[in-house]
Structure formats: C-alpha cells, structure tokens
Picture 1 (cartoon, rainbow, N blue to C red):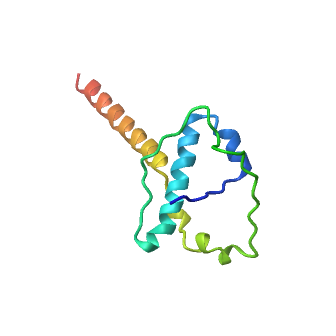
Picture 2 (cartoon, helix red, strand yellow):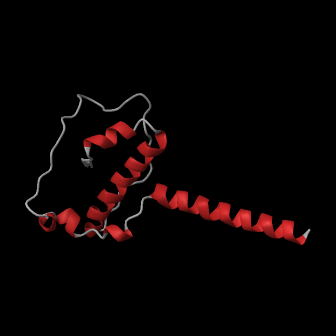
Picture 3 (tube, rainbow, N blue to C red):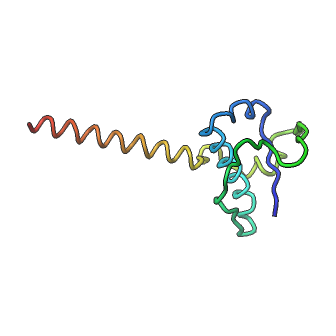
Amino acid sequence: MTYDVVFHPDVQRFCTYPEFKKFTADTAIDGVNKVVAENKEKVSTDYKILKHINCKGERPNKMLVKTLKTEQNELLKNMDFSKTESRLQKDVQAQIDENRKLECNKHLIEKEK
C-alpha cells in the first residue's frame, strides 16, 4: 500500500541535511501509523533513503491543503500534538540523557580521587 504525505514546501529546503531527511521520514511514518492504527494496521519502519534521488518518476506538483476549520480535519482532530514525538527526537533525548549520566559519573569519580 502507498501513502502520500504532504509537508510544507520549506521542509524540502532542509532535507539537504541527512538528519533532517531522516526526521522528516520518521515524522511521515509516525503520522501514517496514527491514522492506520484505527484499523489495527502498522506501517513498517524499515526504509532506506535513496541517495541522489529526490523523487521517483516525474517531479511532484506542490499541493496546498486548505480546510475551513482545523477541527474539521479528521487527521488533526485525532492527534494529540503534546504526545507526538518522532523516533529521532527520542534518540536525541536518549543520547542527551546518556551523556549527562556519563558526565555525572565522571565527576563522581574525580571527587573520590
């Protein structure tokens, strides 16, 4: 099955950075997973970002998404943005926490000497 995901045009400008491109892909997968979870389905997180290929086939047209009110958008209505966190965000936070622990242990060892 194929899903189309729409991002703001400015996102493409930042996708020159590999970390941001991965963040964008993870965000797309997380968003699709939230929608298909209603049918007890899940999208695979096993993907590969192809180098030097921005799009397969013809260049996609830009798309404008308009809604009368945000609460009428079913995707947005069902999302709790305060609980939304991508895998990249979780990985970064885990690395920060790990570095803090290492620094604390380093200081404790230095104090004992």
